[in-house]
Length: 352
Ligand SMILES: *Cc1c(COP(=O)(O)O)cnc(C)c1O
Picture 1 (cartoon, rainbow, N blue to C red):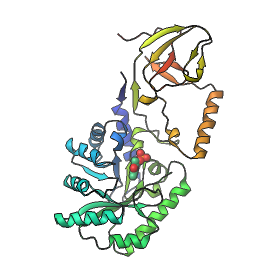
Picture 2: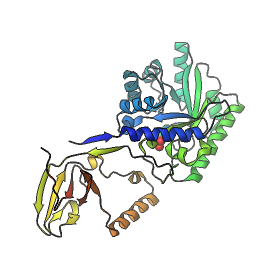
Picture 3: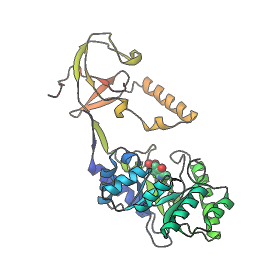
Picture 4: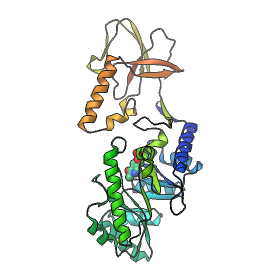
């Protein structure tokens, strides 16, 4: 069996570090400290959405964001009463009604959403809470930053919508400051137009984890933090966030392989001498060696990955696992469900 072990103390430590950096930002012009909105989408980044959210609450986080209605409902069902922002937009009236009933803050992303939310608000005779999303070129949700007249047109006569926040999302903040700054400036331009037209903006937020750590001048009123809580940041950072979880598996088989015996797909390893191996039922499927940098999609990134792979090959860098605090080398390629490790000369046994 494979089990993900979450080290709560390390997670707490990360939360404290993130809160500390947020507090360095000082207070905004209304005297409010920088607000941390914890993003707990994708089953709480794999940690378990309810468990992760509860740990965050225990450690002083009071505001959350999710990507789907189902995630929002799971949190409310688990008795979580804190503020929840829904990051995806919807034109589905039933879905919007369910979210409103559970006091979830909606994302308003288009003229069509605005019309439906306004209609629902009118029917319920109340103001529906939303955050406006501006698309500063991600091409996903949001009113397009350059269509300023359309934005004003969409927002100017909304009587049953309370805009509590306005935000945008960066596409490459972990890597490209110039582009991120351009997105930031586009966002600020829209905010100015909204203010000029006396449209309420609510709190302003643009930073995800990378932007939060890299560009303090973009903090504004709130930041949306997900991966930093897990210490999963793809660039070197001074605050040394902890990796907070590891995967525990077991050995299913042990055997002796003769000399010059191939191991793994593509015959990726060949024994040099008689070798004792152990088979561990944990591969890509369970997330073994699935790397953050392989999530990058541009050709330059792919080239970078290939370059790193070649460097690793030349340096004969290998993958390792730990058994009772000792390191064991992985032989051959990682399979979908299995890895093979070298235990020659070691006293390693199958757990009974
Ligand atoms: C996922 C997400 C975040 C959090 O991103 P991290 O890089 O994990 O901090 C913030 N904002 C939006 C809109 C998101 O979808």
